[in-house]
Image (cartoon, rainbow, N blue to C red; front, side, top):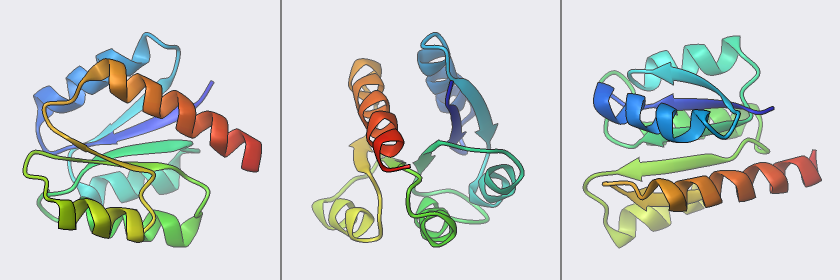
Length: 124
């Protein structure tokens, strides 16, 4: 089963997303900011990343760029509470798989995660 890294500076969001995805059988890793996310990404075999965009220490956009540089086959889903069309476009241009605005619809997230992992497995 796939390993998913959830990166968000809000503990309630991290825990909620973990609970929402863990029941599908995925192994979930949590990080509280982009820097912690980068460390966990490099120390585990991560198949997909869900990250907030605005966080202390390192933004989700910076984390996205580092992940894509390391392996452009890792789907990264960007989350934000303050989304704009420009931010969504920038995320996709930088390699994000998708862009979602909080509050997150867990059913929609499940569909996106499953689709991203299937696509990744076809490419890999």
